[in-house]
Image (cartoon, rainbow, N blue to C red):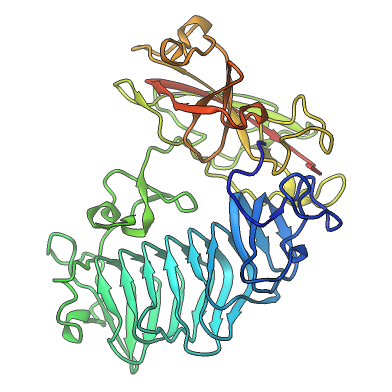
Length: 447
């Protein structure tokens, strides 16, 4: 719920935004289509669910978790430039020449269509439920560290470097001119009606799920294995946040951008965990579905508290991620079906439209930590790394989801990085063995 954290020329926020505003960080637009249409205009989208058609030469950059739902429409995007951290849904993206460079974007039920010979650069993107068509790669076109769960047709030239290609993916091409480097490639490469796949695992052993009706890709691409490509088990824990099990094969190759698919190893705590180091308590939460907890009817809010062991040794917490559906939509007064079970510890003491720090409304949770060897039982055992950070023992600190939790010193006081009062302060990491988070779900969010 703090202010925008990245720089730009125009700003958009579903909360506190309006088409009548000038588009500044203090008075943002409500939708990116309201921003000036210029290739030099960097438009920052705050966390939110933005619906409706969109086209133009603006350069979109997400601050938080913005979702842009095209509602089945076609969006014509700029030729060149950078689009960063946008979750595109339900539509078609087109470019008449070079596509913009996409970085850390998600494409859900999106068709990417080029009408000419483009330069297409994809860095740490996720493609699923979508299709990439007529992608005639130019010599400077490439996929880097991306997760590809969709078919690609019309591929020609270019490069695929440190990407994960799912088993159900078919890449249709007119030649073997794409340069494959260090990919976990479980899919099918189709040329002139013939299908090829990788037959070898990382250690050179035979792939256990190989299809005997497909030829080995090495028959038409002799360097495919010497270039570091292999088939394997991705062991994905959380797709949207790119979290995999520590034994994932995606961690066996890397480049300057990181591991295959841009993933990171992590530990998942399912809501039905039976781990002895995990304690989960709930209030007004329906737990009948073991994989999908929601607010108990007729309540409009509920809480989940989770205590778990981070590490046997005291270490700095790197990031806490929430694997949940974030299709919240506060654009309609009184709420809509899409904005129920919104995971946000705020608002508890802030009035929308009146208080600073609500642009954009970031998703937050409450956190406290302990360096105790055994599981903390009493309040005094939740030390919050207070010797190093000057925090209050036993207190909860408001943190922004999907970021590294930190304690921020501002005007001599201590805040979590999700508290509006932390704006402009000095940030420090938190060292701990144990963590307790409080997740607050709310329904009918209209701000």
